[in-house]
Length: 284
Ligand code: ADP
Image: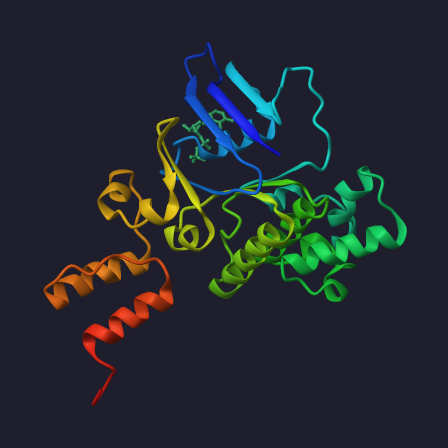
């Protein structure tokens, strides 16, 4: 599914003294199967942008198109095509069991019986939860990290063509973060799921994103290939973002080696560079 935003502006509480312009003339197209990362400082409009892409926030000006069809106030969105994972997904858990929570959207799409069961188990597996152990648990008896996974499973369960995820790895431990990123990459690779992920961690975006958009004050400030932009420390700093660890390491190696060491994003490549410059350990 192709999502297109044309000159979108959106204010919260317009016409009041508390009016906030969250998006200001944003134009952006997300291609089918693309992995787009969205970064930017707090309040720059990232979450609002996801809501507009999903069609749940309707802008005051500009057009949102899903597969070339402009959304209007009357457009009814087809369930299951776009999955929107919000910043506090645990607030979206409302059923008595994990199974029912994850099954909510697939049921609305008409799935039942064994097919429904298999879909729920698959979605729980995607977020790394042991379905047999979790399916009958009460969502509110789970840790925040587990709740976030259950909520994400609920977003994934309808097998949407597009996943719009707002900081999906927040509050997860490092091993779980890596695991989840790997699973999202696999969904993109195997199913061609389009992914738009808002993230604060540039190391994660380096692993995940092929294209990067940096938001600033409600506008698209930068839009380009992630592997190029994420190596540009000065540019990232300008927007309050910290470069990936491998890029910072290459800068340190440059001063160590007394020559320019080109920045890399791949951790293994960075480790090889490090070995090459400082030697292979004691006696190496
Ligand atoms: P980000 O996700 O980059 O942190 P948001 O899209 O959440 O930014 O917010 C953009 C701006 O809109 C911020 O100034 C924020 O305070 C404001 N905003 C977001 N949601 C609301 C709301 N429901 N009511 C009023 N202002 C809001």
